[in-house]
Image (tube, rainbow, N blue to C red; front, side, top):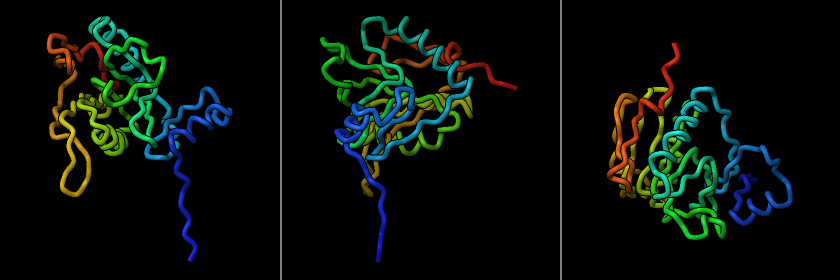
Length: 194
């Protein structure tokens, strides 16, 4: 009996492929559980939401945290996602020596339209397993923020978050780790297209 199996890559192998030029500079890929995943094309609502976060978060967070947009976070030996946005702890070297690891991450954010199920299932369990305390999904399909907190592992060994809070686009939410900072979601969500 001949059983075929997909090749799974380690972080070291993935980085080596990048170094030797196997991927093009503009390839939108990430390593998830050993698989090289082609990221979905982004629509105009996704880009508008991202631009709004790029305007709002630096103004709010200032120099109290490090902001990162569509850049790698090393979660394990076989996962290096590139979330749409992350707020990190400040580090003296500004992450020159290495990409951020889970203990550096204060909040991870994904903007979801066509990737909603993937972000809710694969990415959510990946971030929870890494111990990332807060994970937000800007759900453009339902026009709401899904704020997940308190990662845990259930009795079957699956990872998730104990809390899921829905925040509407006309509401404000406190930024995790910054109890005095409020993000006004009406300044982030794009107007609903008719």
